[in-house]
Length: 258
Length: 324
Ligand SMILES: Nc1ncnc2c1ncn2[C@@H]1O[C@H](COP(=O)(O)OP(=O)(O)O)[C@@H](O)[C@H]1O
Ligand SMILES: [Mg+2]
Image (cartoon, rainbow over all chains, first blue to last red; front, side, top):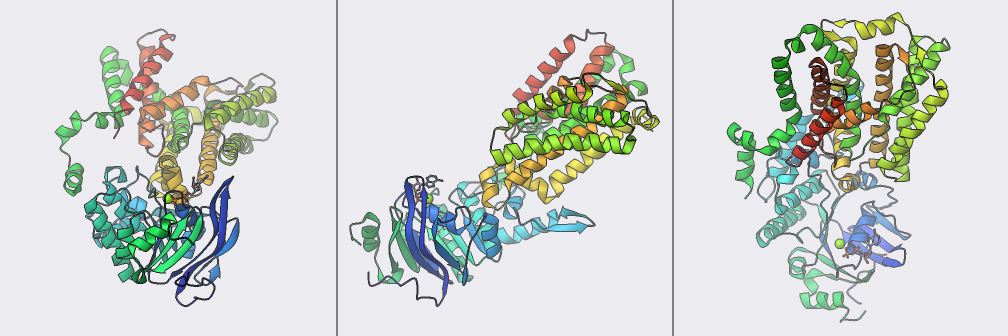
């Protein structure tokens, strides 16, 4: 384990640090003393088999679960989120595996969900629909993915368009960290390529990204750093430039040992 | 990809719309109302007389107010079965306070607060206790009517108050005050649903609770809020009810419960939550009142009215299967 950076000391550029994070659901030990770091301005990948605990870790960082032990340091401060709203306030936006879109609402309503722009009229705050619609247009027009009309309901969008809307929402709100949980798992080849382009663009624009993926080729192509999880544990980390797809696969399956 | 179809979707030709069952499903209440009006007017010309219109509007007021409350609840994928007995409790609380010499304003306030508290209890038990809305509100249905009977000792209280009398008889032209109040309630509700953050969060809570939670919306708070609104509106309905019948009775008012849900269904609000309008249930309530009024004018026996209402509602529910 020479290539594994010590989570305790590599503070330069570290945006997120998980230290011995553990969480069990009854008998299921979903996370066992997970430690990893994530550097600013990079795409950090998190890989592992189904059930390895990736989504659970994501949910800890984005305020849905609270770790039972261990600590998470974000942007210099230890975090103790009680709700997803706390995480969003702190600058962590998440594209969940389920996308967390509301199908019956329009694209612009989803983009601004719980971030609505309002006008104050005395004691009442009314939605500034026009402002949100025009800002939504700007937001989606920067996408590499074909642009869905912002006034159409999400129900009418294709899988790739939905993914684009969810990513756009996460990237749109001066977020310090964007987490994406398997953003291309449900997409076809063409749509996957477009979403990957989006993710690279986000790094160019200075976003830090945590990318959860099953797809080793994608991880090797996009990421700067890879962390591997197996059965709830973080079993290793590599700089992408210094590793190979075979080594990552070996880590994921456990063939490489600890 | 789907861009072209989306653009075309926005500019759908009217002829295509008319062939689309989804369009009819969304406007079922309006279409039904227009058809009823034409049929009843053809059969009995007094149907559209100023006097009859005025009395229909007044008769619709309470139902509109309850349907608005029910819409808020149903839009979060819940249901408030206690809405009518909450109104009964509010009416009795109002009547007891009035009889005890509290004066009109304080008595009104007490009636509304009593109903609102039932709503708060519903909301807290459903949201915090994570118990099915159906069961909880079925429980409060019984509890509220029981409380009303206890408070009133089973007896109605006659209330003669000039202001209440004016409320039930006066108005702006053919629009009685109670109808005016119902319209104001509907307008405020419309603004709340479509022009405030609360409304958006409410629809998100109903349409996709997990997504709403993931975006930091407190679905618990939304649920407590909608049941509280429903209870409060039941309290307002209670005052109009007392004004209309001139007494506070601990009677069950079951038809108001059924009709409030019926108006919401007729109004195209999805029982699965997440989508709905205020204008739809408003028209739905008018349709139900017009139906009953028209049948009465035609001399059809009262016994047929619940049957007619039931058929209309089931038809409307069938239509909602074609909603887009
Ligand atoms: N809310 C939950 N309740 C119970 N068990 C859960 C819950 N969420 C995840 N798990 C379990 O935790 C383990 C890790 O799941 P998850 O984090 O979703 O894996 P991954 O995203 O890597 O596929 C699995 O065994 C899963 O069944
Ligand atoms: Mg997962």
